Every structure is written in structure tokens, then in C-alpha cells.
Amino acid sequence: MLPVILVASLFTLGSDYRAAYQQFQLSKNQFQQYKTESTRLTAVTDTRLVLTARNLLWKTYLQDLRGQLATDTNIADYPQTTVYLNLETELNYLNSLNFFDLTSLSQAKQLSLAWESRLYNSDRLTASARTQILSHRLNQLGLRLQPFIDQASPSSTLDLAKQKMAQFSSTTDLRKRYPLLLDAANVLLQLP
Amino acid sequence: MKYPRFIWIILPVLVFAALLIFFVLRLPQPRSASVTASPSPSPNSQPATLNASPSELQIVVNDIRSFRLDDPELAAPSFSRSLDIPTD
Image (cartoon, rainbow over all chains, first blue to last red; front, side, top):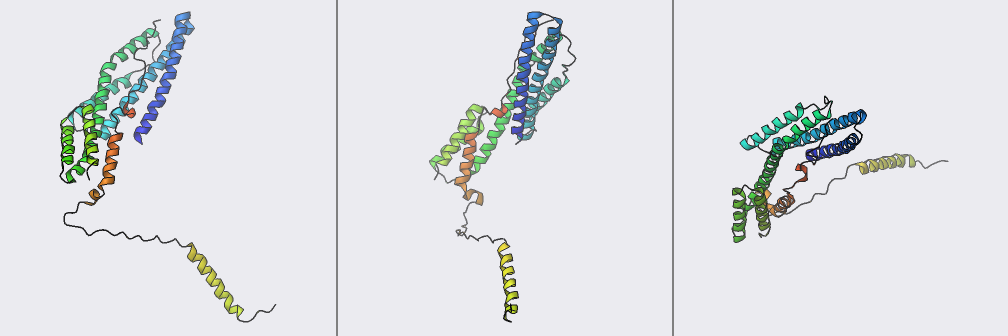
């Protein structure tokens, strides 16, 4: 149930961001066209709003990943703890930002560039978190399948399933591990 | 109208019987006891969870098949990575 709520929350925030982004584009175009104080102030306000919406969207996504890492995986594991702590650091940065004090477009631009410059590392961090969550889920599925292998009667088909499971356990690449587990499961289904 | 004397004996009996039937019908129906014959356990019998392996294995296999590496629940939201804010 929790992931569903989180996805719903992200979906709503995504809609809010898109609305803010459209308004920002409109204000920006009007400011660039008319260059009046009125259009400048509107552009500053809408830039503030889109920066806030974008920050909140990304922050919520990182919080969701951090939550799933904490609940789904073994946080005592060192690489996972590192990713968890790096997510914490990134979230602290995003929480420390204050867009409401921005009074000029130049200030907003500077802050936006600083925010965007962190995205590369932030993306890598989220990729690591996703990999660890998916890897844990695969391991859980493998653990559920293992008893059926252990209890099956010896046969060449079972040997094939065992071979697939051994490869699954020794491989680290998720894209290779999943087909191996699936193959082992399908082979097991063929046992009498 | 004058009733025969025995009606005063029959009437309470009938009322009591009607009440009895009424309350008995309102009692919860007992569940039908189904008896399933099971073979006597042999010394090499598997644990109960594994005796039902075909269906349980199928459940695990289905879960594995529904696993997705590109789980949409984990997908990053899309947004502009360069807002291109104009200067004042």
C-alpha cells in the first residue's frame, strides 16, 4: 500500500510542477518580450514557484527511495548504508534551500544553476538506490524458489535448475541475474 | 362463541410449538463438516508446505515473472534539467 501512496504523491507533485513550469515559460516569454517592471516581477514570482515545485518533486523522490531502502533492504550492509547516508546528505541540501527570498531573476538563475549542477551526482545516487532495492527483491524471490529445488527429486532437469540458480547467485549484474532466475523457475515448473 | 374445553389445552401447546420453531430457525446454521481422506504419513514425507508444491511453486514463478527491472514505482520523475532563466 505504501508504494502506491508514494507514487500517488509523486504523481500529484509532478502535475504541480508541470503547471508551474508552464506558467514560468509564459511569464519568461512575456518578460523577454516587454521588459517591463511588471512582467519582471511576475517572472520572478513564477520562477520562484517553479524552482520550489521542482525541488519538492525531486526531494520527495529521494525520500521515497530512502524509505524503500530502509524498509526493503538490509541497511546494515555497507554499500546500502553508504547510499542511504548519501541520500540523507542530498536531502539535507534540498531542505536547506530557500526560494522564497529570491528577489531577482539573476539570483534565481544562480540558485537554479547550482541546483542543476548537483543533478549528475544525484542521478547516480538514485541509480544506485534503485539497483539495491531491485537486487534485494530479486534475492527475496531467489530465496523463495530455493526450497523447491532443495526438495525436488534428482533429475537432469533439476540439475539444470540448480545450475541456473548457481549462476544467479554468483552474478551481480541485475540484467543478467533476472533471466537466470526466471529460467530456473521455468525449468522447475517442468519437473514432474 | 363457545369453544370445546380441550382448545384451552391445545392452544398453549400450539403457541409454544410455534415459538420454538421460530427461535430454532433463527439459530445459526451449523457448518457442514467435510471429511477429507489423507494418506497416512510415511517416514519420508515432505513438510506440509512442500506437499502443496505445484500451486505454491506456481505462485513463486508468477511473482518472478511479474518482477520488473524498470519498476514504474521506482522511476525518477521527469522535469526540466535546465530552466534557462533569463537575467534581469
